[in-house]
Every structure is written in C-alpha cells, then in structure tokens.
Length: 460
Image 1 (cartoon, one colour):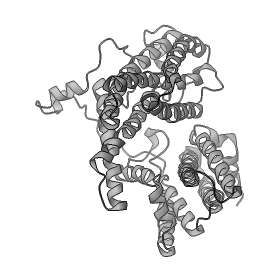
Image 2 (cartoon, rainbow, N blue to C red; image 1 turned 60 degrees about the vertical axis):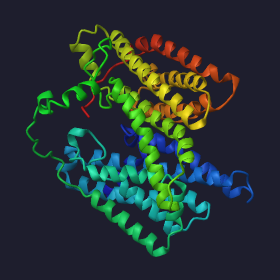
Image 3 (cartoon, rainbow, N blue to C red; image 1 turned 180 degrees about the vertical axis):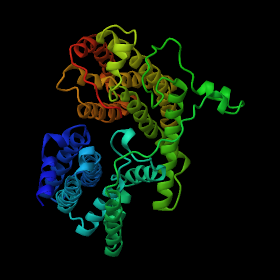
Image 4 (cartoon, helix red, strand yellow; image 1 turned 90 degrees about the vertical axis):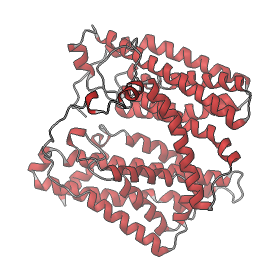
C-alpha cells in the first residue's frame, strides 16, 4: 500500500509533466469543456446555438479523454520501463497498482461534463472506457528504441475510432445506446485496457538483421516513378536530420494535400451512408470539398512543425558538421524550414484556390489570389513554434506542442476559410502580418537559441 501511494504521488509532481506534452493540451481542453458545461447547466433552457454548444462540449470532452489517458499512459510506461523498476519488484507492483487507482480517479473526474448535460452515467463510463482502450499500450509512447513492435491494425483502429467519435451523430448513438450495449462497451474497454497495462520484461527483443533498401530493390519500371516522387530541389540546405514526413519533397507534399482532401471526403461519404443510408449528392459533395481541403492543409502544416520537436541530433550536428557555431546552424535550419514551408504554402494555396473555385462557384482569379494568400498564412503559422525557442524556460516539448496546435489548428483553420469565403477588407492584412512575423523570427531566433544550453537528450 505504501509503494502504491508513493507511486500515486508522482502523478501530482513535476515528474508527471516531464516529457509529457499531452498534459498541457488536456488542461487547455479541460478549461473549455468544464467551463461551457457549467455555463450550460446554469443557463436558461432556451439559449441561442444550444445544439452547437453541446456538440462543442462533447468534442472537447473527447479530446480531453485522449489527452488525459495518453498522459497517464506516457507516465506509466516511462516509470515501468526503467531498469530500476525492473530490479525492484515492489516498485513495479506499486506503479502497476497506482495506474489503476489513477484511472479510477480520472473516470470519476472526467465524467462530470456529460453528466452536467443530462447524459446517462453508464453510457458516459462506456465512452471513457473506449477512450482508455484506444490510448493505452506500450507501443504508443516512449522512445522508439524501447517500444514494443508497433501493431499496425491497432494503430489504425485507434485513429479511426478517435475520428469517428468526434462526429456528433456517432456520439449520440453511444450515449443513447441501451444499457446492455453500454455495459458491454464498458467491460470490453476496461478489459482491453487491463490487458494493455500488463507489465512485461523491459528488455528489448533481439533486433532483426538490417537490410539496406536501395533503388535496386525496386522494380525497374517503378524507379522513374519513385525518383519523381522523391525529388528534392538541389538548392535546399542539406542538413542530415530525420524527415519523417518527407516535407522536403514537394511532390509528396502535393500528394498529401490532394490525397488528404479526397480521403476526408470519402470518409465523410461513408459515414453519411452508414448513419443516413444514402450517399451525398454531387452538389453537396462538391460544396464540401473546400472544407476537406482545409483539413488536409492541417496535415501538411503539422508535418512541417515536426522539425522543432525532435532536437536530439542538434548538439551532435553542431559539433561534427561544418556549420560553425550554434547561431549559424540555427539559421541554416530556419532556411530549410522556410524554404520547405514556401513550397508547401504554394502547393496548398494553389489547391485551396482550385477547390474553392470548383466547390463554391467563385471567380477563378479571386480563388487563386486568396488561396495563395492562405498559403502565405500557412508559412507564418508553421513558424509559430519558433516562439518557444526564444527563451530557455519556454524551450520545452510541451510548450512546442501547445504552440503548434494553437497556431496550426486554431489560427490556420479559421483564417483559411476567412481568406477565401469572406469579404472583410482587413483579411489582406493577415498574410502581410505573417510575412512580418516570419522575418522577425528569422532575425531573432538564431541569436536567442545560440545563448541557450543544448543538453544531450536520449534518442527517440
């Protein structure tokens, strides 16, 4: 019991915040969700826009569940994978019991917003159990070198489940399900979570033999296609950093933008078919394409912002590569980031303009002009994470994630629709402001980051 209490105490200490950026995201959505839920509880019954506010609370609550259970999962596996925990069985047992107690407390606290709006208790707990089942597991968090083998199907199911339960109609189906169905979902979710939290040996499995995959491994007919897809402009700065999302490949960025739009449209059509029994009409499908194009733009922007989240190689590159001092390396990194952002902004702006012209029946010149202006705005928003590099106190992964989400999801999503579909005279000031912000950050960031210490971080 004493070991469990000591392990539970860590969830209320700075240790829980360390390398756990989902905590800040959860706090942000907790303020939104609880604030609106309490206001709706105290407000008169006939409030303008009540259904929209209810949908907003439930969507925020679902993201809050994701953040809460992901942060608990991150802390648990960080503690349980430690060699010290492996050598001390009491510590291992304490962490295992503590995570169950914390989950029980989280279930109790997080069920408040739906209950305030009159949702059934059993159905609310079943939704929480589903969220816990989707975001628990040793392969979803921690350094890649210490994770278990990634289960592709589970990862696909968790992503699709998260997107589906963001839809208000799907949430309504779960909250209005009969009590036997809700009880079954609750037991299934808890059973999956208990299975995922089982502690196993932290030691790594034997590594398979590494095979170098080169161009000779691809059929000769596909080599020209692959070379075209992987084309990289020769004038881009060459920095040996991981490019997980291939943001330096303009053709890949264009395919992500176009393919993301079509995939979002197809998923929406499938959900409409499942819920209402019919596919959308051609006109409805055409009018919905600009919204899906904006969603695909978010994917491109989030991929561009990843350069500032993985910084484990920076000290080694400064020491071993011919960049000079830290300020020169940072300036070269910003040059690469800005050039790739300009490419992505041009592609995304052109696509947004064409889709808006096709879907909204607006003049082509108008759509292309303001679409490219939205592309300039994308360049500005993907530089928002640089604000966290200006101070050593703010140079944290959690702050970087909050800046990324607030800049990309909130600002970019709102302003891209504002740029093309509104008629406000001041909307032209937004891309001009983005250019000014980018120029100031390019001048200030290298010197500010050079004055900070770059500690060596473990590989991820």
